[in-house]
Image (cartoon, rainbow, N blue to C red; front, side, top):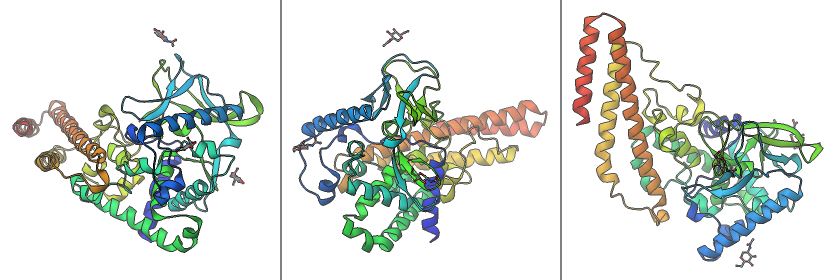
Length: 422
Ligand SMILES: *[C@@H]1O[C@H](CO)[C@@H](O)[C@H](O)[C@H]1NC(C)=O
Ligand SMILES: *[C@@H]1O[C@H](CO)[C@@H](O)[C@H](O)[C@H]1NC(C)=O
Ligand SMILES: *[C@@H]1O[C@H](CO)[C@@H](O)[C@H](O)[C@H]1NC(C)=O
C-alpha cells in the first residue's frame, strides 16, 4: 500500500505545476502506422519509411482538424529538434507576449480520476480512452507517441532490468522497484475488470508514461491532454505562459492559451516547463536527459547527501537551485567534498565496465543504453561542478574570517582536489 501511495504521490506532485514535457524519445522511432490496438496485439507493422510518411500524414490531419475546431497556432509549426525529438517551433520571430497556441476547451481531452494522488488511475483512464477511440478526439489520439516509442524510453517503467546496475545508485534501483511494485499491485487488483476491455499491463505501462509526460491537471476531478501544447518539450525555467482566456477566433468559448514568455527567434523551439527538474528526475520519471548545461547544473538527487526514494519521487527540492547553502561550516563542507570525491571515483571506476555493457534484448538498437551512458556522463559533470562550488565555498570561508586553521584546511582540501583530478 505504501508503495502505491508513493507512486501516485510522486507523479501528481510533478504535474501540479501544470504542463508536461513532450515525448522523451529518440526520434527515429517516431511515426509508426501501427495503431494502438495492432501494437497491443503484436500484429505486423509496415516498414520505417512508410511509417514516417503515415506519421506525417496524421500530423497534417491533426492540424487541419484543430484548425477546423477553431484553434489558433499561426506563429508555430511542428518539427524535429536536432536530437530528433518532435516539438513545437517558432514559425516567425516572436516577441515576449505573442500568442503561440490557443486551443478551444471543447477539443481538450478531459479524463476523470477519483483522487488527486491516484496516478495509476490516470494511466487507466488514458488507456481506456485510447482503446475506445472517441471520434471527437481520434485525430489527437492518433498523434500521441506510440507504444513502440515507449519501449525505447529509459524511464522507470521501461528501463531494462539488466541496465539497473549502470545507474550505480541503490536509491535509484529501490525507486524503480518500488514504482514497478505499485504498478503491478494496481494491475493485479484491476486486471479482471480491465482485460475484457482490451487492456494489458504493457498498455498500462505505456499510458502511465504518456500520462506522466503529457497531461495537465484540469480541475479537481479531471486531468487533461491539450492538443499541440502536449507536444512542447520541457526545459527548466521555461518562460512560456499559460492561461484560460476567450478564444481569439470565437470569444464566446474559452481557450487554453500559451504565450511567449520571452522573445523566440524563428526556428527555435517553443518550450514548456513546470518547475525545476534535476536530470535524474527527468530521466526516471519521463525518460529523457536534459541538455548538457541544464543537466550538469545541479547535483542529481541520487548524489545528494540526503538522497532518498522520497526525494527522487519529487517531494523534494524543486525550489532550491543554489547549493551548497546547507553546508555552512568548514567541517561540513570538507565532509561533503570528500563524500563526493569518493562518489566520483566510484563512477569513474564503473565507466570501464559500462563502456562495454551488453545490450538488453529489448534494446537491440542500443538507444536506451546510449541514453543511460549519457546520463552517467552528465552525472559525473554535475558532481564535478558541485565540487567546484564546495571548493569556492571553502575559499570564501577562508577569506571571510581570519581563522588560521580554516585557512590551512582549505589549502589542504585544494591540494587534495587537485590530486584527485589527476
Ligand atoms: C496505415 O497503413 C495502412 C496500410 O498499411 C493504410 O491503409 C492506412 O491508411 C494507414 N493509416 C494512416 C492513419 O496513415
Ligand atoms: C528573424 O530575425 C533575424 C534577425 O533579426 C532575421 O535575420 C530573420 O530574417 C528573421 N526571420 C524571419 C523569419 O522573419
Ligand atoms: C471538471 O471538468 C469536467 C469536464 O469538463 C466537468 O465535467 C466537471 O464537472 C469539473 N469538475 C469540477 C469540480 O469543476
